[in-house]
Image (tube, rainbow, N blue to C red; front, side):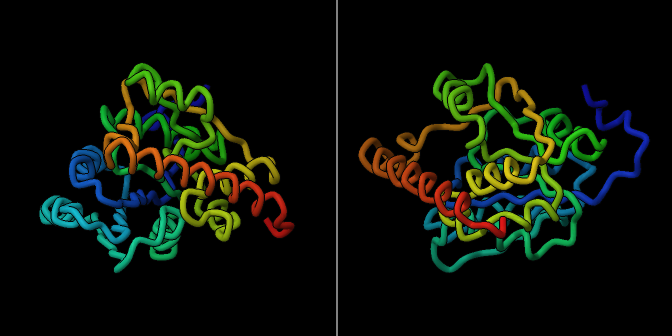
Length: 232
């Protein structure tokens, strides 16, 4: 069991949070308000991936009272993997925290639990796994925990993944394949009470279902590309 963040005797490495955003006006401000309470973070990078709703306005409102928030905007939707890569190449932080913009029930203690094993030297990467939030999120994380978008990882490790595989919804799969291939020390961290709404709630039943199909197709593509890429 790793120590709590407050109990570690190490000098903490520099920390940055990267949050990719696409049409998450209803959730991104809530997530940012929690992240801003996590004082150990030096930089909060929000990458808006061509949103057509009020996501940018929500970020700007929070940015006005929090100088650590940096907003980067893609003119067109390029996909989650590309959004995270844009954030990654703009920061010099040693450790990266990846968060989805639609999280519900997030608290500062969840971030502390996610970061602690990495900065304390117990893990190379942690994965936030939902429990006790909503049934559909709990089931998804029980069945496929490796698809969780909530991570803490050393920047050098994240830079080494196959970014071709990470395109679109392939990011988590590309990270997972790299972790298995390179024997990273990975630790699951239970996030009790956290969940995010399903795609169907965001986009409506039909569009949500189509988007879910697109996501799983890109996950399969990512696994194939990452597995066949000898350089990663």
